[in-house]
Length: 255
Ligand code: PGA
Image (cartoon, rainbow, N blue to C red):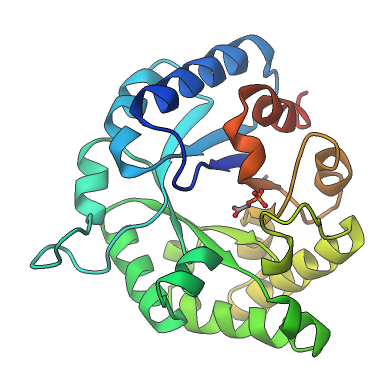
């Protein structure tokens, strides 16, 4: 049975104290309210990570993730943070290939393949993001775009390594816009992604892969989205900055 995951992506928000306060609220609410096997993952800016990992001790339903990691093991890359450094403070997950990284920092599928390798080599679990722009959807090339992102970004992995990934489908036109993909639109793409994984690896690997939906997901639309057969949770931006909203989204999977 694949894992149900709700991951919060704080992006470049919250100073150190604000981040710790929010995380403390989240851990307390999760302890009191979460009755299923779902996992919360909080992906904070680098500055918070070490403290959040300490605070998460004893809360096995809350994990900590970074939002990026460099592709090199170490070296003269001023301002960057390595996968090994993240691992050394106890970080478990790392978001790779978020559309904002692709768009504003020029991250290509080729670069992301390297980042994925380095993250896995350092025992981090990548949350690998894929998704089409509005223009790509309107030109009806969205399936091909997603397929290329998979082929060029992660399909070089062997099955054992691929199995360590979480995939996040985030239509770029739905991120931070308040526009959500309909549950049918999202399910259609999630099913397509799972079919591609089955074709590349096998049905078992595909059935075991957690595929998250991201893009203006909130407590109102999460129940319908998460009820779809191939949607295993969410990657949450704006709504992850409010403990009540984030935990309400997580509660959708309560037993
Ligand atoms: P959003 O962001 O929920 O604010 O649309 C999602 C994301 O970028 O991961």
